[in-house]
Image (cartoon, rainbow, N blue to C red):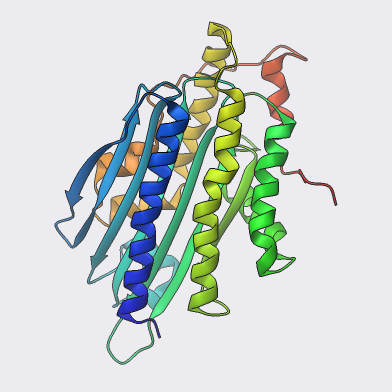
Length: 304
């Protein structure tokens, strides 16, 4: 059983997490500020979207909180989870995507969320989910090792199997089947987490949400002053095209948001402000642009 007090605790944490992430990223950016846009969902709930554009480091970034609820689940959810049919639901979470100016700073995404579905005379169905992943345009092994070390360190208190399991889930989820490549270098992805109970599951979700800044900000700080050319900028925009392809073709969060009548502007906040496609593009052999391809296959980043 999940009490209203526990639901309120999750919401309080998520709102504070949004505040902390925005404040920390503003400091790393050094120029831009997040502008807040509050919205109401006609069917129930709403949220607050925060977007930073044309900052000193961040070309466009969004950190969104939403809490939506309703009397019935969308068709996409009940098709895969028939036990949810006929239940009222609540879904709340923080989701963010950061698209930097500098091609040497990776794009990053993070999300933490809580879901509960209830009906009279039945036990509630609830779970936590989330994770974070990194999408570099250029290959820096030390950044990838740091990213995965933070992920492993926060997972280790919950069991030796947690990091490898959620790392694999991330590699499998953020995979573009039509390209036969991962979207980036992965990280963590988990869903349907309700064991061994509410307190442990909530604790893990909090550690993932808080761990994002530990993983991402040091990479931003180390790369934000690296000089770049128009060639490198063009390649960054080309790589952003893969980001768009994944979010519009495969991403379950995008589909859920649109099907539940969420705010379209907030849902599609994850799109980069600029992207490009080039027919049959092939980078020159042994060029910096070609080296990222080796990173786009699942691999172990940390020593055994």
